[in-house]
Length: 402
Image (cartoon, rainbow, N blue to C red):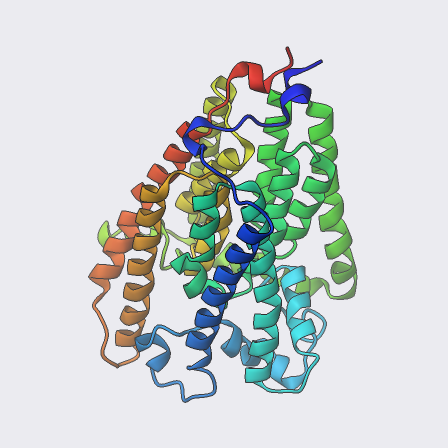
């Protein structure tokens, strides 16, 4: 009998040791705390809906993409995503837009219906984290400032819930279902596709490559099932996501933007695409080599790969903090690193939107505090990932076949 079958798919890391929640009381507390955080986040965003676009969305730090996109994506005119109007997001996010637009017309109603869908995804995530993470991590997720700030900024919670569920299932040895959910997550926001690559590496290291390939195939099947109908019905609308991202310059929150503003570099979009891809592949290769030498739990591996992607990618929107939050909770690096990450996230959030306020002619901040927060976040991300990595290393006997 293999060590894996005796002990389960992952040994508990020493640094993550600590009591787990005791259901159902602990689970109820976590979901209640998550509900409170979501309610505050919703009320904050709601306070800026339906008012003139006069900069208060930035000075009050209550901006959300969901409300203005109701108008710019043609939903206010009854347009169907992809079919009548190209959409800048993958197909499951477009489906969520269409679903939220089934009720009474109006941007506020659209926002409220979208928020209900996103809140359900957040609650599912809180249950997932509560059941599979240590007690401090479960409460940290529920009370995280990043959840408060970004839950209703965009549709990222949908991909986070599906992708994280896939990570957990893969971690527990159910690779085909895990891969399928990762594929569904990638059909909402593309980043969970990274976890499929990490999963194949994990399966190969466990000498379960055939199982990993099946999980990869299940992820591909999920992507095909969700994308092919839209490709067939509206190829130009479906391709908007890829056209837009191929031509985008360095995004505000990215290290490439920092290099352009501070180092006076200039990166044409074509060159930037190659540079960011090359940097990601180099960082991911380093993670793979480290993993093959000394394996870690699957959430810690996925967290490291995601950090590589965020540090190298030319696009880094502020709500990507939602991508990190459940993985950081599962691959718990400790309370100190978590507080550091959330703290720099708050600083970046505030400085970014107060700078935008200045751009539109109202009181705000100069760009320097925002650039400093972007620069500071990079080493903190690396530190959090490294702490999780060191805390979740596995013994060879716990990982490979005996």
